[in-house]
Image 1 (tube, helix red, strand yellow):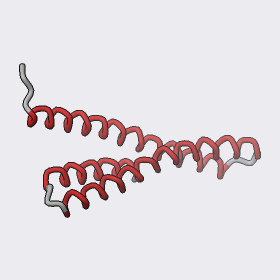
Image 2 (tube, helix red, strand yellow; image 1 turned 135 degrees about the horizontal axis):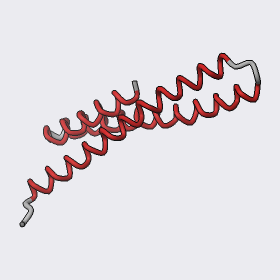
Image 3 (tube, one colour; image 1 turned 120 degrees about the vertical axis):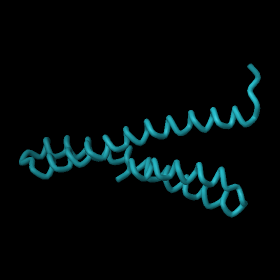
Length: 105
């Protein structure tokens, strides 16, 4: 079976969007875990326990933050492609941004 450029583009876009959706789910979990550990740190009375939960919260928050950064990058790409008149590419970048920004909520 010979793949045309359109089929290759569609296949690649499908793979990228699938991976983005998996990443978005992971980031949402990280945001929830960060909040859970931050609350536990705030309620703890023992300094060692506070540090333990705060470190876990920070690690999860950094992962969620990476999705916010990825969302901003995707928005920049959407703007660049839109200004160049590449509507399809701009739309795909905007869709990726939505996925990442939802994950960062």
